[in-house]
Length: 412
Image 1 (cartoon, rainbow, N blue to C red):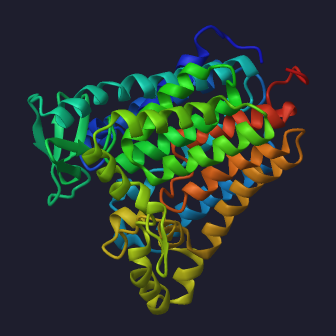
Image 2: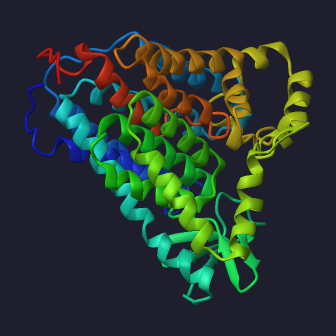
């Protein structure tokens, strides 16, 4: 696509993604921080729009998510008590939609370069956390500040020089060691694990030859002890070894398992089994690793006591965080905010893009990878977060040539 200046266009997209990512140092509960971050994100988005000279095209898949965003914006006006004036008039979700539309209209090299740089950015920001992870493990003290995040004053986090945080409630004394879960620059280890899982899947799709980077992502993800990340490894291993005849990732995981059993002290092996291995156990209550099951009774009570209009149309955008009746941390939040109608629009959008697109392509087994982002919404119901946006972009780039540019690049 012809541009006024194509040379640094990918950096504009990366700039937007950076300021849209929920790093802990962009604590959204701090009003000034929220305004500053949103201003920078819109700044980069406006630059992207002004750098684009030709008409924008988009496929029907985008209609569903556009309707979802507009629908949630309208729903806010039926629940005015949940919102301040600024929150009421701010067009939340519009920026993400514009980003997705514009990036999927770019040439393939810009899409790939944007994704490549963003994955590298998340890795670079996460790596310092490993230093502090092993310092905690081995009892080597670094100075840290105790902070609160997300308005949860009952929980403390160790903040190491604004480079990495660790939940004090997730540091476990194990014999002579202290085992932690890697959070990196994110509020929870599960959040980092999910982000790394989505980016790893995106990396497998977009850059199959970059094997060393995949190993680094896997290494970082393993230290999060995230159920979602370990589940993604199963999906990737099946796809790579069975359908692509590529044993690299599977061999790396098997070799790593043997190294773990041989080199890691038994105390830490037992702790790992307790904190992660046992989470794959299935009981009468379901999978042990399903940490969202505890909200089921609470949500069932909401469904049984809420009027039909709210059940269908929801409580509005971000009401799950703003309303005293919200606070759900699973797919329940999608239903709380958008109602059954809004939730259905998200599922249709995700299914169309992440199931229908791969199935109708030559590489239909890619569905083993693209299903994971849909499943991850069960615990992390944020379908317009940056990691999902880059995943959507590579799916559109790979499977729908007509959206990439007006030059109709067919075979790449």
